[in-house]
Length: 328
Image 1 (cartoon, rainbow, N blue to C red):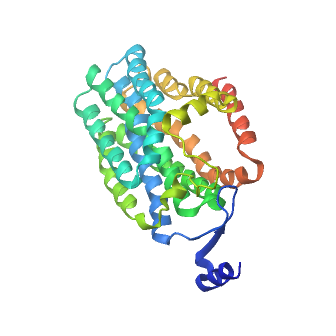
Image 2: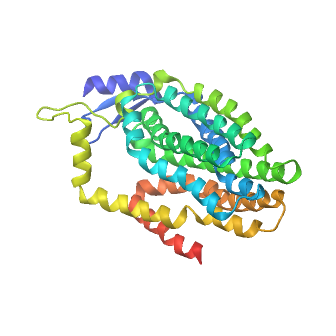
Image 3: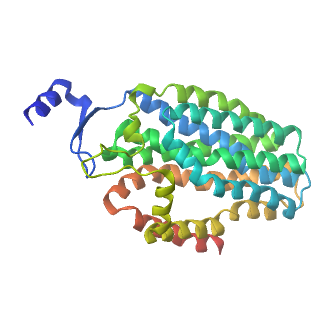
């Protein structure tokens, strides 16, 4: 204990003592401002890229004369692929040491799909682009969470996640305004060129995060193996998850939430933009995104801190209760 105290005094405010059920006691250095700000701005710009390719696609295809059935099928291709790839992508994120490389590959895929949508809005190519998005999108959330955990540790994770969400929501607001104006005054096609351009600062912000400051074991939520503990493989872990009633309940709740929530915004935009100019549909989508993401940007950091106090379950129940009100 004396050696631990002397170590803490020697590195001053740069040291944080982590104690939990798995780690007996571990001293780690706080991340540099460069890494913290890099993660902030990566979340900001990534939301710009995803927002441009994903959120405005429905409005773009409506302007191209696509009917609700074709748009619904194309969008569902991404949703279905995302649902299937969630679990393997989480396992890949856990197993890859350099998670920045994995995220880089995912970011590069997004402007490729944007090019497809901009130049070749053909049904099967749009479906192919949506499948590509459905494969890479599930890696961003666990990878960003893993990097956050590897940087700050468990005690500061709630605050860090709230900070991530605040920057992501702010990026959504800014990109929605810019894309709405581009779609109305220039063309709906220009939205995808904007998304391609923003992918560059997204990668720059990612490279600002120092790999040496990301603790690999901590980013996997893995502690030191104690006496009597055994390491299980992926198959055993999957069986353990399937047999856990609590996890099955939360999985079912999340699936039902997305069934009720995911299609609301695209469907509403299709209804509002019907028989209007292509630029008008972009403005409708922009207005809808700005309102929701502005509220998220203002509340995200506070909700992150509140999650550490209340726990996640009450906040999830409040969020899910809003869905039927939104539908009405």
